[in-house]
Length: 95
Image (tube, rainbow, N blue to C red):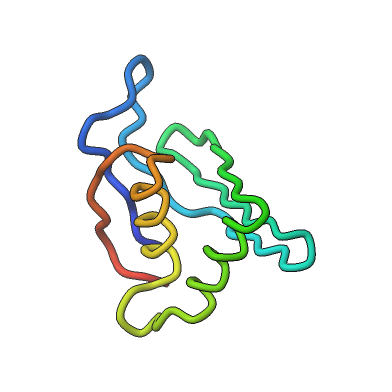
């Protein structure tokens, strides 16, 4: 099973407490980085970076040492750092 991201504060209403990376799509020619997360309720959320910001993120991910941190972990940490998802804890091991 892939790593799981547990929110420090679950989303109000229906309890969304965990998310996993379902898709990472790097479109170099179009300068788009698209990320899809799947939550514990089976819902998906989409996050997109475009233009220069997408290129910078894709270059960083492309050059990352994935033997120390998985791609999924790096993507989740990036989304938190950019304020796209709330803070949480990453648990589990990469596939």
